[in-house]
Length: 449
Ligand code: GLU
Image 1: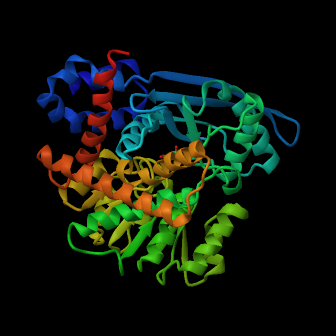
Image 2: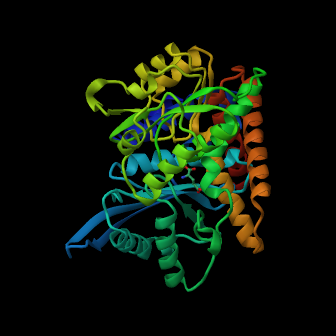
């Protein structure tokens, strides 16, 4: 394990998020390597931490004032042992190589857990869609795709959405890709319904995180009905987490964005959720406006320097971090425990710092890391690819039933791997080990490539 950490420290000394993701996996899989020395001899981990290919490119575009702007684009083609590279595109000012690599690394294990034949990749740009006009977003997406199109394809690499990339961006990206390739193929997922998208794809990540929580609760013979829940974020993942929690009889009391959060003790019911969807998806406004519309709620502006996020300091049973990486630090994790939270199902990728994760594990709560709990999104992307390949469309119920079955099987795989390697109920070890073994075995079969 130390050798692996040394390699990333020496080769990529400044990539802190990538180090964080690699360190966690390296710790979890150590007993697997001890038991199966052939993985060590074949340099499996050394190969897994080195992307098969990284593409970085310039994205010049012209804003509405006629000024030329330049952003940076990335695509990390991390691992294709079990299928073509697959993973989202993130448009956010924080995007850099370290964040792209950690996401692509996590994606490899997540995709392996889905049971579908998809490898791991991730991409994006430091472009910030916030405050940009539709035309600016379109020109940016077209410029982005005018380079990316030559590196992707339905059997090579299939990007999708992530933070800052929703239906609008996928539409613009797809339009340009189709024009440049002169073919209508399933080269992106998360497409709109009337031109190749899958039912339940927008809902999938949020619904999946709730289904995973349901499976964890079932191990203690409990259900989600009546539970009070904290959900961070207010984008795609958060919205459909709230929708499914409401359908299952739970109550959600918080939502957030980068500026602050709202607390609504009465619960964000279906009607209020419809308003949030309008506010975020159509008006592209801020969560603060929720408190103006519903005066029974309270808005608290973010104080980045405070060392903790007050959003996590409310009495509740379950938490669904659905905003971004490292949004829960040790103090937040302790606050959650002190407030009675005993179920954490991560809708975001790596939202808890390593110190926070240790607190969850030490307290033996039901804690599901993102690579297991949020795999529903990419799983339904996989189902979108299947439907496109067969040129058919499954009904809503059929996709949701398949999603539910996939989340159940991920839960089982994590639980049984955690038991087999001596840490029963530790879903972090379980997810890392189960995902690792699937990818490692495929790499062993395929030789040193
Ligand atoms: N961005 C999502 C994730 O983190 C979905 C990726 C996909 O659908 O390819 O898994």
